[in-house]
Length: 205
Image 1: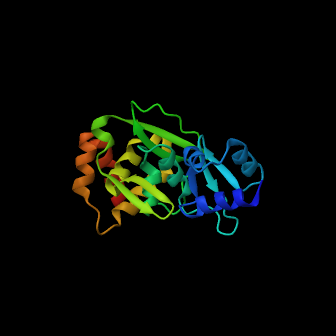
Image 2 (image 1 turned 60 degrees about the vertical axis):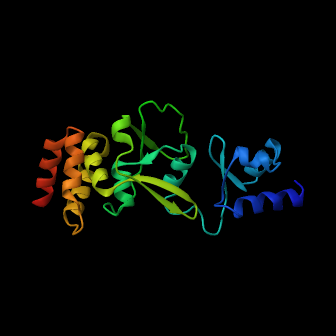
Image 3 (image 1 turned 30 degrees about the vertical axis):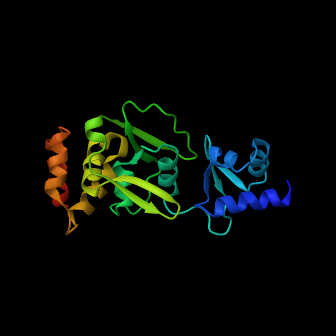
């Protein structure tokens, strides 16, 4: 590969957030052959179909890169449940599987380099209590703390009792929690009884 081509690609990635789509590369006259060569040399990493990361050997991937990449490849995906609880500080250890919310009608493929669990929501529930966090490397769409606790309890069979117990215990210790907000969402999702039961159990631990 010619040096000026390599420098052009380097500048293209580094002028942004080190993530670029295949269409952006094509617009900058980077060919498929050149992309393949950069992948083989370890200069680029394929994040998913049509998306690439410019490898940073010194600093590595950004914190919460899994969330960034999931939101990058699906512009409507939202981080939810235990993964959102980790983002909000209710879990000390990052869940091994990233929990992602999408609309029931969204059948776009999300092939990523790490394990994911996809939860499908109706139009009514999907957009409620969603927050957008803008980072240097990209945008993370994530549900609010209270909604995330409720969803973690809803999906307790997938997440596991130990993790849900830790989420509830840490939530109950918060001084700024909005219990009314959480219970209103729980009632809307028709899981008010189980959520109240788990919160009461967390209060007694």
